[in-house]
Length: 475
Image 1 (spheres, one colour):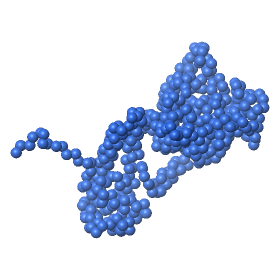
Image 2 (cartoon, one colour; image 1 turned 45 degrees about the vertical axis):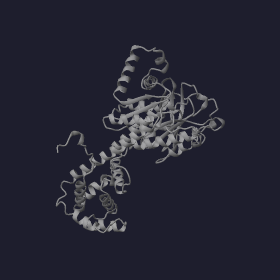
Image 3 (cartoon, rainbow, N blue to C red; image 1 turned 90 degrees about the vertical axis):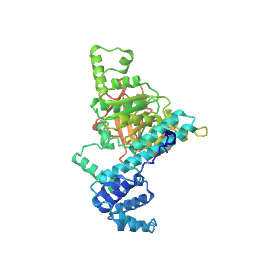
Image 4 (cartoon, rainbow, N blue to C red; image 1 turned 30 degrees about the horizontal axis):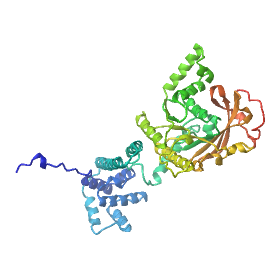
């Protein structure tokens, strides 16, 4: 009987390869070097067969305990975990005899990796489809789909996720120490090109959430832009920076960056009153900025999910497939992805703060989030900022790896063309606390670190907050 096209049904086979799973397990059973090489790169998700999952988990525990891996030790581990059935020893013995050599183990590994990714894609596709049928928020569903796909492409492949034996991160840390030891002046994190700040913090650390807090109109946006301007001026063309501003256009940000890195004032730029020499200087500053990997975004309704999505896209497009710094201006202007009628602003800010910390860890870069301070500081004679002054949520302090307070050294200098500002490192999870004095030039929205000779502080640095003083001389 001839089979018609109507009777032909394509059989969808769930991605898996039982033979490849057996061969890879055999390679690990007969060659200890193979086991120690690929076990750290795998998890049980590489295997579809339930028995193979149990065997691999036993191997993983033996590896973590630095015990040799063979049929007997794996069987013993399974017995201790009550995972052994009556035929498991015979199966392990048969596995160890499938191939006489482990030379092709990487080919089997690649097959299992491919099938695992395909299974994950099927699962994600089903999740996206189900959400599309039930969701009434297209934007939220799109962000969710992007997140699922991105996580699969970065951390969700079983290589760097889950529990990891201490030996591996320990080895990575020792290697990093040895690299730093070769150059005692090297900075472990991203350089800000403020010498004293970099010496105290060792640079901006990957995975860190850094809160830069100040009262309104003190200069937190300007300080953040000075960090970017420093990178441009020092020709740091390899680092990728994403700056999200929720209240200032991209052109306004460029204007400030040009004022910082040239002798043309903000007033001259606003009125377009500059001479030919100054125009040449502006063009050179623009050309220098254009060579750097700096990206600006203006979105007054930005949410943590939106920012995370934009950063993932940028990372996938960057030359080195990484982002080196994210700046958000500012936290209290953001909208919460999960906001609802019953939530308070405090719980919303707490949720956003936690999301930003998670984003810093996921992207592997420092995230600087600017933040307002509560008005309680206005009611105190002592204007020194405290961690309790962080506005709307104590969780900001909890989530942050570093909290920087920016304030005027003397409130009477407000509006002066040149004055002193203080950066107070009030929280530093992995380092010292310190106050650093900066010279502020208002016409250029420029922060310059005061020299070491002008960095001494008495115990009452904010005591003259209401006392009229002459502005310090420019240095």
